[in-house]
Structures are given as structure tokens and as C-alpha cells.
Length: 475
Ligand code: BYC
Ligand code: FE
Ligand code: FE
Image 1 (tube, protein in one colour):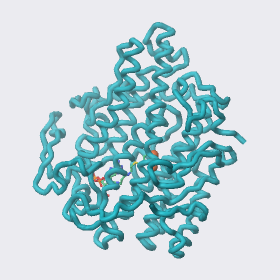
Image 2 (cartoon, helix red, strand yellow):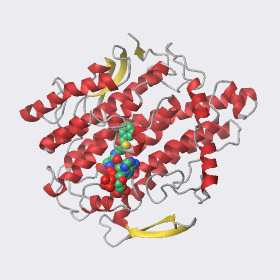
Image 3 (cartoon, helix red, strand yellow):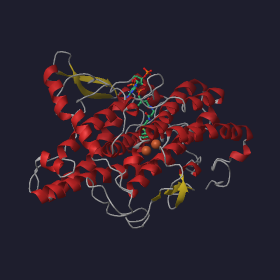
Image 4 (cartoon, protein in one colour):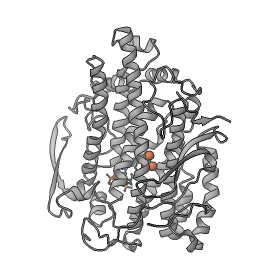
């Protein structure tokens, strides 16, 4: 196993002490990162003691240490999963050749762009969530928010390490730019659409951690297959942290649903207006938020047919999630079929080279994974004796990227007239009124163990501690 230097200014398992130039460059970037954290990270909680897990190793059994930390003192480090000896390239035209420890010159700008795109999303999400602490539904949730935030900060470090270590001056410039673009900024926005959407209520936060962090999971899984071994090892370790982010989303949405079911039972009605009057979030509103965040996350996969994606696959740059489970790792003459709009209000079948369809294939895996939570939530509803069913909308609905971009369809994916679509969007997506209702519930609850009225308590606390534990001490 690689040795871990936890006492270094930048904790790492990449022997940073042996590369003074790189170490100095990263130590130069570190204060800029901390300034960014103070300006753009969680607003107002710099002095609070937060019960956080910190990555202190990379082995599956015990890589994390839990303890009370002030966020600016968090030990953001550089951790790569251990190398796999004799690893060979698992797909594309270079299949079977040894993996690369350096970036081949001909793929340099492509890798840089992918690493920058990945890196850009990490600080973007911290910026999007920066005000949420003020309206936390409990100390348990506040702690989870901050856990997600510090780990997205670490994911930024992971990408910045690659830029500094393998891309020379361009890489250092890109690392600086990662702190200059900001979510929602009109002049210098973040690169991908979803990361410029505001997240100013906790229902959106849970939706984001369920749907958007899960895009992260699938993109990281694809990058974990890369022939560029340092990228593969970096993203493999990031995936271990990602699981908690999606846990926060899944349990968060589940607790919102559980609370509205309790209210529905108490009142003996599923009338959304009654649920709202009782201070809970009705399931129809949950569905609308889901429609919005799911369709926005689908856009993050790019187009169904993409020559970019085709060349990433051909060249060993980016594979499919869990590449080993696919039968053919070259996909030379194979094709992929998907339905797209015919331009006249109907549907037509498209055939594309399999290699160019990698975005669609990755997205399909993602959608399957999204369904898992829905099954669980619908069980809760069914067990409570109500007929409502939550559903993911079709992947054609409300899209801005890909074959179905700006094509009016209903939530089942059937093309419809523009005015019918506009009316549907008003009822199937969160309206200004829905958003302000959800916002009206956002009151800060900071007494240990207490929950806001619109959300049920979690089943258990963090790291075997009770739910009542004081997870954040607000100093
Ligand atoms: N918004 O050929 P196409 C995470 C651009 S989330 C704006 O289909 P390609 C996290 C595209 O760049 C994971 N632009 O796209 C989650 C291209 O531009 P050029 C983030 C978009 O290249 C929560 C053009 O449209 N990681 O980690 O096959 C919290 C043509 O598109 C969008 C990654 O994304 C969009 N939605 O695939 C914290 C992995 N979609 O070339 C963190 C790295 C497409 O014409 N990125 N475009 O200038 C990639 O692998 C690819 O860039 C994409 C796009 C999959 C995103
Ligand atoms: Fe991340
Ligand atoms: Fe994440």
C-alpha cells in the first residue's frame, strides 16, 4: 500500500515530498483555495466545530477518521487509490496495452478539458449550497451538508493535483481558473448547466445530492476506466466518498416523504393543500422537484450521438461505467439504436456507431440507478395506504441537450404541441409559488435531536452516534 503523509501541509499519498517543484506549486495554490472557501464556501460557519469524517487512508476497511473540526482547518488531501500492478487498457483501440503513467501528447488537450470539466463541478456545488446552513432542518442535516461540501472541496483538490502534476503551466492556469468561475455568475459561470442552478432550499439540496451527485458517480466510474492511470486511481478513490453524498439525497427525500405520509395519515386525506397547511411538503411538490432535477441531470451526459464520446472511447480516454461487465470492449462495427424526434411532431429511429453512443449508454446505466430510490419511496407510500406513485419522467421530457433538446413532449415522452407543453411545464415543474411555499418552511432548527416540522428524523445518526448528538457546535 502507498504510504500516507498526513502531517504534511497537504496530506497525500503521492510522495509529494519527493517532488519539490510540484509541492511548491500546490502550496502556492492552497491559500487561494482557502480564500475561495472563506468567500464562496458555507457562509458564516467558519468558527463552528463540525463532526466530520476526513480521508486519512485509501484502503476500503478504514480510510476515514471522524472528529470535530472547524471547516477551514479541514485536512484536504490528495489521495489516489493504490495502483493495480500490471494494469492494462480495458477498451478501445489501445486495448491490452499497458496503462499510461503520463499523458500522451496527442491526447493532452482532451484530457485537460475533461479534468477541468470534472474539476469545475466540485467547487460549483459548494457555491450553489453556500447559504443552506442558515435554514438547516437539524444539526444532523447541517453536518451532512458540510460533510458533502468539504468532500467536494477535496474533489477539487484531486483534479487540481492532476492539472499541476501532469499539465505544466497550462494545468496551473486552469487550476487558478477553477477558483475564478462561479456558479450562476453572468460573466464567468460554471461550465455545465446544472451547476449554475441555485440551490436555496433543502428539498433542492436532497434532489441535487440524489440526482446530480449520481451523475458524478457515473462520470467518475467512466473516468475510473481511463488508460491514464493517475486519473483512474484518483477517480476510484473519489467514488468512495461519493456514496455518502447520494445517501444524503436518498434518505433526505425519503424523510420528506415519510413526514408528508405521517401528516396525510393524521389528517386522513391526500389533499396537497391540507398537507401544506399542516406544514409538510405534499408528494405532488416532491414529484415536481424530481422532474426538474432529473431532467437537468440527464443533460449532464451530453448528446446521445457524440463524436467526442466516440473518440474518448476509441483512444482509451474515458470508458463506460463498469467497463468489464460489457461483452465487447472495442465496439468497432457495432451500432446503437435510439429514438429521436423526426422534426414533424413524430418519432424516428436513429442508428449510430456504438462508439458514438457512449453518452447514451452511460446515461441509461444512470437512469437504472435512479430508479432504485423511487422503488423504495413508493413502498413507503404504499405501506402507508396511499395510491400516489412517484415516477421519473421520460428522458425526453424537458431536455436542453441531446436529440430531445427543446422538443415539446409530455412526461411520458410523447411529442405534444408547444402550447400544451408550456401548460404542462407550469404544472409538472416547480412554479414560483411552489418554490416560495417550500422556502417558507425553511426555518433553522439547531437544538440537538430536533427536526423541522417538514422532515422526519433519520433512522440513525452518523458513525454510530445517536441522532441527538450535537453534530455541529455553533461557535
Ligand atoms: N452543459 O459531444 P457532446 C459531479 C457541451 S458531476 C453545457 O454531446 P461530450 C458532481 C460539450 O462540452 C460529473 N455544455 O458532449 C456532482 C460539447 O462542447 P464542445 C461531472 C454541455 O463532450 C455533484 C458540446 O456540448 N463530470 O462530479 O460527449 C456535485 C457537445 O456535446 C453540456 C463530467 O462531466 C451541458 N450539460 O460530453 C459535485 C465528466 N453537455 O466540445 C460534483 C467530464 C454537453 O462542442 N466531462 N455540453 O465545446 C465529460 O465527460 C463531457 O464533457 C460531458 C459532455 C459528458 C459533460
Ligand atoms: Fe464530487
Ligand atoms: Fe458528490
